Image (tube, rainbow, N blue to C red; front, side):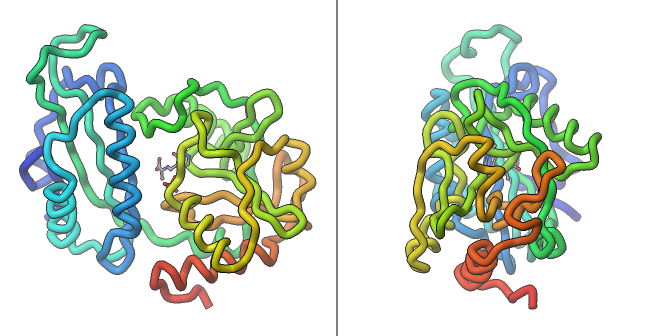
Length: 283
Ligand code: PDD
């Protein structure tokens, strides 16, 4: 049987009772997290909880239970589902109330749900690299909040699927921001360069891990805006996320980048990531 967490209870997924008046459903009024599970254990849960708390604070919402308690529940869920490799998906909405834009009455309980999914590591694409397309970033100006409102990301991702590409790199007036569900980084003259962690991008946990790894590997990590033109001419281009890890990009808008194959810095980061996460090498 598969299980899920609904506020204070771990229940069979079939017993989930979610309301059509849930504000997450009506307004996208909520936030979420995706935490990797490797070998039955959550990876970088601390930074994910910190980001969760920040997202909640920014939308003026409080967690129904403490982080410690939440962590206990999530560990129980992983155990109940016998999950080895996958993710925990977690979301918190502003609860159930008659539909009105302003916040619901004080005392309305937030709705927290979490469930696990089996997700294998993307060995094939991590090895070969992926192709992406560029599109204007039409999202709002608080992309640092991990909000449930993902419509621009959904539409962009679908466009990439329809043209046979793997993802979209967003840009605002020619400045690269990030991808539909990952951060974008380039390598130029031996340095890793990526957009500053401001309001224009999600502050990715994998991006943070890469920053630490780069420090250990003595690779400069520079946070500064990159133009689309600079990205196209970069020595290496890659994206990072909980699900994609360190993913080389070898083609953008039909043009080969970084020589059309994964470069040496990406390879070093992939190996360092595996060591750091205690993973078996891809061989
Ligand atoms: N997405 N940027 C965006 C817009 C994202 O949605 C994500 C993660 C990231 C990378 O963050 P992290 O390294 O913490 O996963 C960057 C998750 C995986 C998702 O929506 O499924």
